[in-house]
Length: 225
Image 1: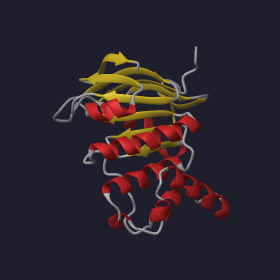
Image 2 (image 1 turned 60 degrees about the horizontal axis):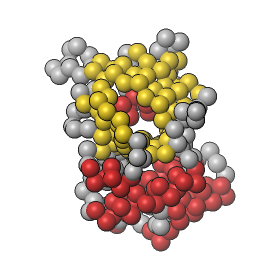
Image 3 (image 1 turned 135 degrees about the vertical axis):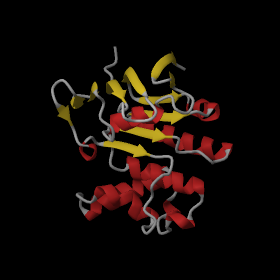
Image 4 (image 1 turned 180 degrees about the vertical axis):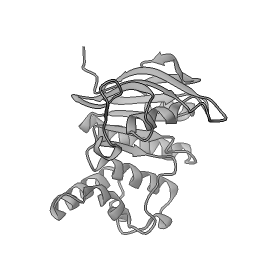
């Protein structure tokens, strides 16, 4: 049996003081490849990603990436988000507007030598076919180009896991297919778990792989394709 590259046991309950109560209670294992987290709005998809990334802390749970324990509430282990080595692309993309595409991509590489920063940036810009856009700022890019820059920035650091929270909202079908193709090609070479949140059947079909269905904070079905 293939060892999971990411394992998560999460029980997250919103504070009782909140007007709307929500409970996420899941146990999942992920091997390298794409897992689509599918479900309606409010199912807990983004909450699941935020817990894995360390942006939210479960009341109880354990998250392990390979041999590294990122969270274990019983053992009082809670690795800081910036030390979890996880790539995360939000729906808003969150590109720095004052930076060029290349500088956005190189942002997480500050500790490396200039030579290594440039080598990695060139490699990832080429993988997502945006070499010619390196000197442009986000406002000068189309939605699809911004998406490619955001993916490149998340992947250039060689993360152990990539989290994608509805990043292709608003793009047309052909752009979604093209970006999905480049993302899958990249992961064929690097082999990490990619968790892709969506409520779009079209995006789920383009990415293939495993689908986990969430509803009301719980797994209601799983499908391997």
